[in-house]
Image 1 (cartoon, one colour):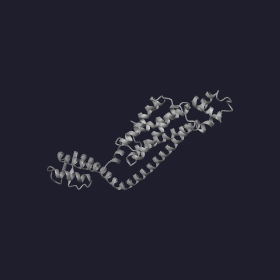
Image 2 (tube, rainbow, N blue to C red):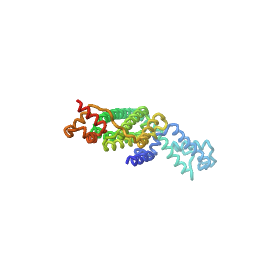
Image 3 (spheres, rainbow, N blue to C red):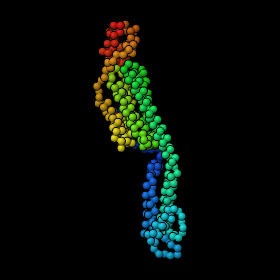
Image 4 (cartoon, rainbow, N blue to C red):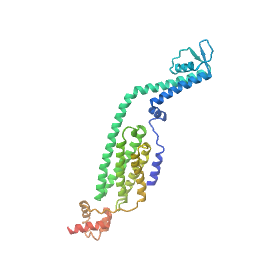
Length: 325
């Protein structure tokens, strides 16, 4: 099940495309002023050279050939939609004029639009970056709290609480995955000064992923807990895979993302079983709870160990401590 899930979500990494913006809209949004000026010059000079080569014109009442200067002048007048009338197109020249007029209108609209919206866009970018920083910081804090609770329940053999929190963790990392991929695609999350904050988030995810791996390998853990832990590990690995495409120029961040992906493979290869050995007051109380059910606890330590989710050896030690009190 885990392998099939990994194959599906990793395949998604190659298909991620923005949904709110069309490819053309995304390109226009990223269009720089220098490139826009280059497009304007190419259109003016290119059309001017075509007018000069094809000579499709009337210049007043004369029919002499159009020189290069006049051709460029006519191209500028056409681009600006001034239409002085001192030079008029004929034949194929009319089609060229239509192309240049529409091209000029589109480019000038882009130029004026970028100028008028630049200040507003800067303010929106600042607000967007700040909100993302706050959201990611909250995710980091919540992951830290979740990881502490998972380790606490794990250490104290509190399987009911561990199962609840492991399910919460899977739901939470799924929310983080959706947020990161959507905001990176649609909002260019990784391009607005969030590199350090995102790196901290990936490191927090790596810590939680290792905790889940420990839970998966521990003997006595309920199968449902291990299933949710596997799903969380897989989802975090997916985050690493999906986000790599947005951090290609950031080697340190890429290193953390690679760890998220590699942890999946390590988990599959690491079959060493972990036994918990720490005896805590909470664990002693849990074993004591079976005194009424099993008067001879030592003789029934295997059943008690299976119900609590601990090794027979550890359960036996706890019983001996209880009997010595």
